[in-house]
Image (cartoon, rainbow, N blue to C red; front, top):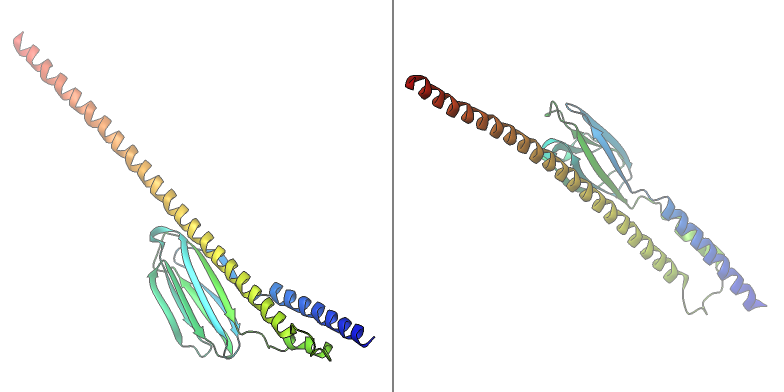
Length: 225
């Protein structure tokens, strides 16, 4: 009977552990966004951070003339801690203090070209670390188990981190693919434009040459008569 109660407690603890792990995974703080930045405009975003956490921002310009943009990251105290000038992509990681961080994308240098920008936020150490210890309240007298619940928790956290990393890599690959596709379409349009222009010029030059040659022969006939 005593052994059955221990097994029941372990099962309850495992169920609670699985639910908390799935809940933590579904409430992931990471995110990626894509937006259009009009010409001569600046867009800013804000992210609330805790002390001793980690904030990583990675961005890419997917579409727009020259594929460049200005970027800067500002701390809650108002200091610019990271900046880029006329770059197509960038990665910045900082250890944060408590407060609201502001990061901006600036396209005011371009008067006619709209930019499509993708950026991803990766936030670490944002949890309190208390929910992961709740499962210990359900466990009593499990010293005889060969596999500890701490090992199960470590395994679930490892799977969670690897899944999150794979999602981030897939998002970056999609951004690279969109950028390359837009670049190839832009080059295709340029090639077609210049090809049509050269064709029109060649036709005009050929017509002018034929007209000049005919005019030369017409002048000779008139002088002979």
